[in-house]
Length: 190
Image (cartoon, rainbow, N blue to C red; front, side, top):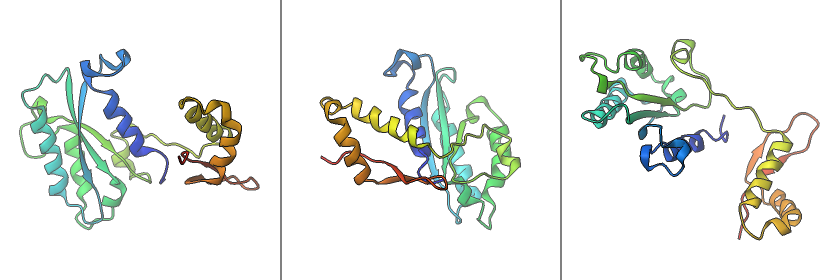
């Protein structure tokens, strides 16, 4: 659903997975990642998706695939399911062999991330890992607020006043459970 940090998660992965150039020793043993995004819509075509996979394969050609991976990111993949041209049908051979009509060479097998606000049909979903995130509780939202404040020097001392201000300047809402009050997480306006 909108606002559940799908794009943020993608950005965190891209930032962390930089191979030996990673900012943290924890991630230095992971492959370096290169993301190639394709914005899906009801007007998406099979050729557009195939072209994105081929583009990623070209990035991998000649690289050490033990240290490098190129990844196709289909943003809003659920919107492509509404296309009359059925572009997501092309995913089956692309995810299994890395290509459709070509010889399946190692550099043609690329990584894949599909980002959607709703679940896809089971034939597509069983080819990967499905990650779903529920609504955060009031306690989780307060913990996020405290974490944000703790990272900004000098704000911790004024945190009780800031939490009241944060709730008054809401931008991102979590839907409350029946009978509970609205909870918000926001950034501090300077």
